[in-house]
Amino acid sequence: MTSWPEETSRLAGVGIGASGLASLVRDPHELAVQLSAELGTPTAIAIDAVTAHLGALGEAGGAVVALGTGAIAISHPGMAEAAGGDHAWRRVDGWGHLLGDRGGGAWLGRRGLEAAMRAYDGVDHGGHALLVAGRERFGAPESWPAQLYTRQDRAGVLAEFAAAVVGVAGRGDETACVLVRDAGREAAKSGLAALGEDRPANLVLTGGLVGAGPLLSDAFAEEVARQRGDVSIGEALGDPLEGSLSLARLRARDALGPQEGFIWS
Image 1 (spheres, rainbow, N blue to C red):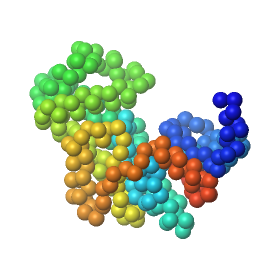
Image 2 (cartoon, helix red, strand yellow):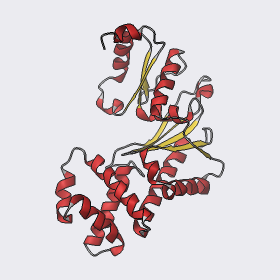
Image 3 (cartoon, rainbow, N blue to C red):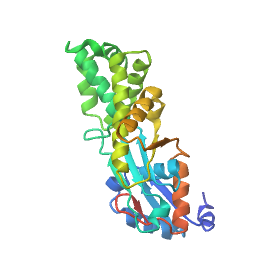
Image 4 (cartoon, helix red, strand yellow):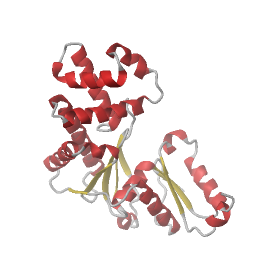
């Protein structure tokens, strides 16, 4: 690592995508300025949703829905359009597991546990298979509140249970299938809201939860088609790491302006 300062002199630009920039960093702009000075090269830092978008769509316009532990949809008109004056990134959701993240892993895991508790209470036995899965993961249902409510990593723990929900759905359990399909529909609604009527009609679904399989992705596509038949659903061109490289290239040629809450340079 002693050669790192010398190596940076060969860089034309640096792009960094990270979660928590808007909420955990006191002054992201100042951080970007400090990094630019220290590295001796133009630097841009962005929320991870921006680099997910740049990775999935490159410089094209449209919206990307990222489903991981949380869920966020983000859109941009495309770099060609932005050059004409529209620099607006637009986000939908990403508000955390208590207020939103609709369709994400924590959202799905929480709903799976809710269905399990309804079965445990004798209110709705449709969640019996999820109750069995919940007992395997957390033990006695009476202990679940104490295990979950006080944890700082609650969202991550809930998201881990999403895998169990997907597994139960894969065995044909109707309650679990409904929950997974609901996640796909919620993701579609967020993506379409991010697109609005003024963005190119391109939509990509990405993130770890996409591995839930066709039950989720088919529900996503069906909801998009139901609301907006003109929207094209595509595969991601690349991942967020490639999006960070794209951010660096854009910063190097001064082709992407800052926007509070999204990008700082």
